[in-house]
Image 1: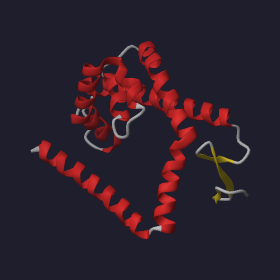
Image 2 (image 1 turned 60 degrees about the vertical axis):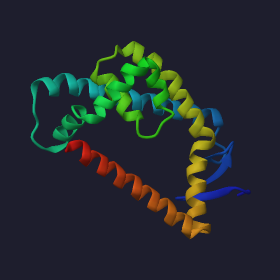
Image 3 (image 1 turned 45 degrees about the vertical axis):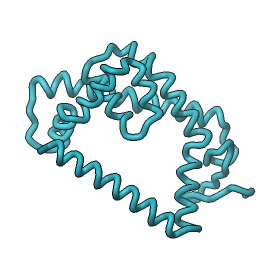
Image 4 (image 1 turned 90 degrees about the vertical axis):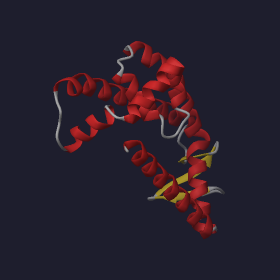
Length: 182
């Protein structure tokens, strides 16, 4: 293996174009795979939200289990925020959400909840999925992997800082949700 190579679960990986991909794996294939993955995830989120919204919110009030959690999420503040984003930015929010962390699922699900026509949603989704695939097939995974590898292997204190930052972000989310609930 050459410079910049690692072995993950027995598979030799190397940094090619800034991304960790299997050695010899064509860049175009990884780009196409990630593009299809982004499209599939977006469509699944959209359709799950749309079907559940049309059926569950109107006809059923589940008391427990995953259906109850999904019902609460789709009728809660997160969906209202996603609806506000879509109302403010229109369909431009769909491709832009692929460039964010934490808003993507909300926007995609809200598109299903408010029943944006499927054809318009899909056309709006394509540039966002392409951008996401381009980022993650070039530098995206490499940045995450390099940050964690540097933190764990070389600078233990950086791993502590990253862990504390994640814990603080999660605590902040919990605190904000509790304040909104009151």
